[in-house]
View 1 (tube, rainbow, N blue to C red):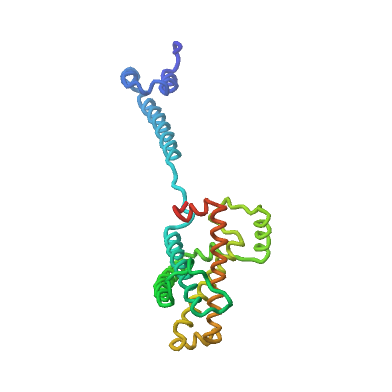
View 2: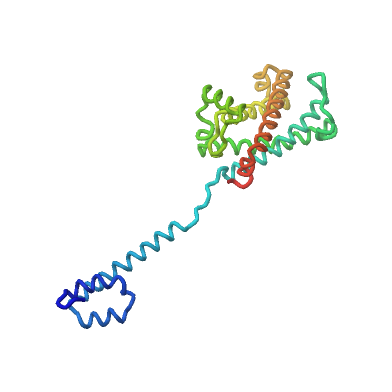
Length: 259
């Protein structure tokens, strides 16, 4: 410090470099009591700045948890539905073989139940699992707003554009949280088919007790054709669904672990 200089100015400029020295500050306050308030203020500001910087650094260093692409309830009902659907289809093929609608039968190697009675037992057991699981899915889908957010809107232009991009290998799958228009159409459509196959199955199962439902389908025989067509549609959907899951592995991972 120059002779005749302002001691307060010296203290204020020097303290940022030596404020951590308690002995220096104690001696300075003793020799210059009139400026002790400036020393405390400068030290408080310096420490406050350091602490704020540390706090901000800590906030940025905290890792953020990745947002789930598929919620737990969606993953649960999806896999339960997959099991129930496979059981329904395989037992349904055995039931079909007992009274074919067309000139072919399904190989016994891909059917379930062994004979008509056994196939019916499997079919009814899987039916209740599918119906309860389906009601849970529909209820949560509408209540949570998932159907509205994921499946709407669907436009012809969007479907045609995305279908063209898919066929040429240019359809992006970077953001799995958003469905493209082709996915929206397929998922919305399969929900309708699922409802239709359950209703037509009930009409076939209880044609007398549910005669009004059976009549709505045009009678027992027509209800069987409707049921078969719905089954074939679901099988085609499953083939496409599995192929796409294999082509985009991260979508399968998201349906298993959520991310």
